[in-house]
Image (cartoon, rainbow, N blue to C red):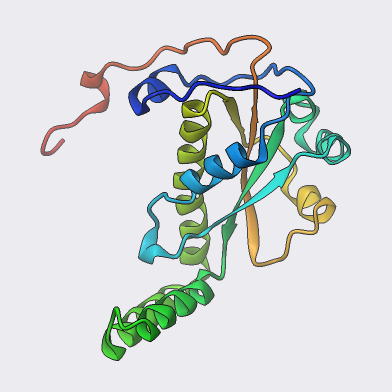
Length: 210
């Protein structure tokens, strides 16, 4: 079964996005729509434009059911139309070379700028903690954008951090280069997510200095 959803505005998507944990089974997101959601997610900003995320998309029912116990039995993993495992790239300096070599070849930057950027990136990525921090931080930016893009296309989501990362890596053959950051279930809600209270701005915003 497929669903034709209405596109909503950015503000509406932000205000109406809630974490949904109950999904209608057998709803198929058209591949074109899913690709649009992923493309919008991939437009997120990233450090050095390294795009330190990869999207491991699970749609086959057998694969979702394989992941279900790894996610500690969270039923939305089995019921949702798709589960996107957002991965962080621990070796994004490789992408840096590809990007800046391409920009140099296209005449968009000079050799000096290319060398400066690549050296800066590779210097930073020589520190394991920097690589891990950047993987998590930038994958998080893409994950949030993915959820808003899904809502804009009329689909609901829930982000999940509760899963066995080691077992997921083993089950889905994730290369050592990547770390699982979170899972996102996407589909059509069987029951609406409930709004959660938000702290007022006077508790969240500090003007100028503490």
